[in-house]
Length: 198
Image (cartoon, rainbow, N blue to C red; front, side):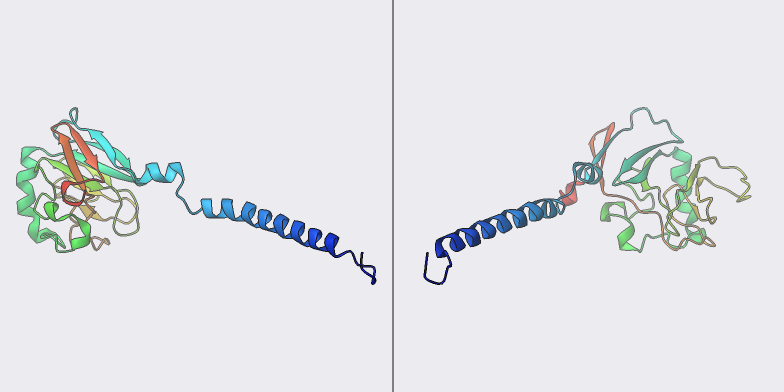
C-alpha cells in the first residue's frame, strides 16, 4: 500500500478482471451474431437441387415440385401439344424467347426444354407472382373461347402456352421462367443443376 491510501496491485487486478470479463461478454454477444449470418439448415435445403421422378407422369399430365420455395411445373406434353407450339408464334409476346433471363441457353427453343415432350417451368406468374393453373385440354374455357392448352393465372388473367410463353393481351410481360435442370436418367429430373453450370 502506498502513502496515498491506494492499493495499486488491487487496482491492476480489478482492471484486468473487468477487461477479461468485458472481452468474454463481447465474444458471447458476437458469436450468435456472427452465426446468424450463416444460412440455416432449412435455408440450405430450400436452395438445394430438387429431384423429380417423372416415370409416372402420363402425356397431358403435370406434377409440381418445390424448388427454392417456388412451385416448379413438370408437364409431359402430348405429341399434338408439341406440334401445336410452332403454330402459336403470332399469338405470343415473346415467341422466340428473346428475354435471356427467363430460360437457360439449352431451353431457348420453341419447346423451351431439353426434351420436346417434357416442360419444366416455374409456376410463378411474371405479372405479380400468383400461381397459374394448368388447363391442358384444347377446348373452350370461360377465360378463352379458342383455348389451345396451357396455363391461366386466375389473379389477373395472364395466359401462357404449354411452353410457358405468354400470350398477347396478358398483363404479364414475360414468359414463365425455366429453371436450370438436367436428367440423371430417363425417369429422374434434377431441378437446380445442369451440366452447363455444374
